[in-house]
Image 1 (cartoon, helix red, strand yellow):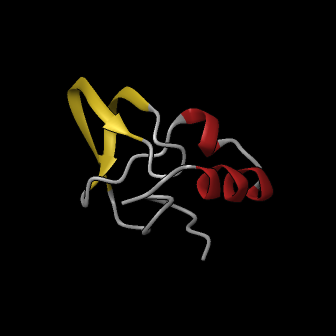
Image 2 (cartoon, rainbow, N blue to C red):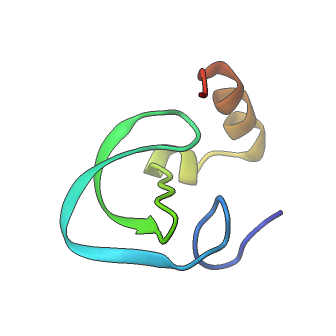
Length: 66
């Protein structure tokens, strides 16, 4: 499913904080500083956010998920 606004994972609203904190990208696992996550805590890094669907799927499949 493709969301036009909000979280790229679930479509829920994004929450913006005044200061950046660490978050792990849902797709590649990279830990980055961000001030934006969704209300459920999902975070997508800039690299994954701008990746093609094929590249994103390949990246996600290579990263071990719990």
